[in-house]
Length: 76
Image 1: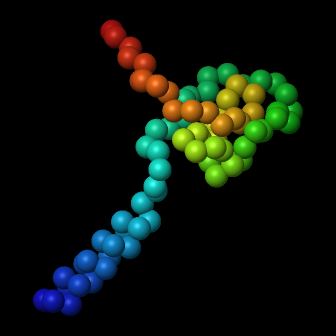
Image 2: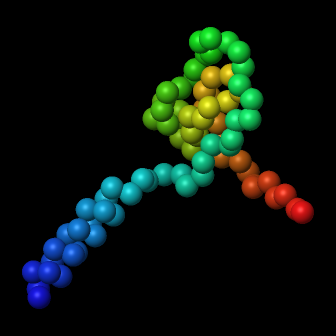
Image 3: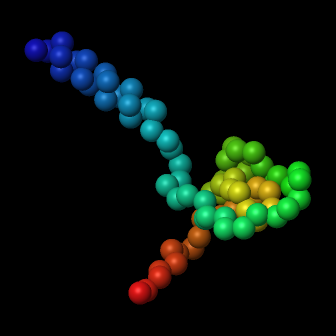
């Protein structure tokens, strides 16, 4: 019984260490794209962006953007 509990604990620790660290926000959706064949990309991954910014697709290429200050609420 102790070995099962130990294996369960080790499994949970492994899963916990693989969780993504950092921001929980996602990039805003891009509804339209430019027609440029090879648009300028400021970044390729979040590691290339300054702290608290994310590499997100934009209208034309990718850019490092900040987290929105507050979520946009849509009332119906």
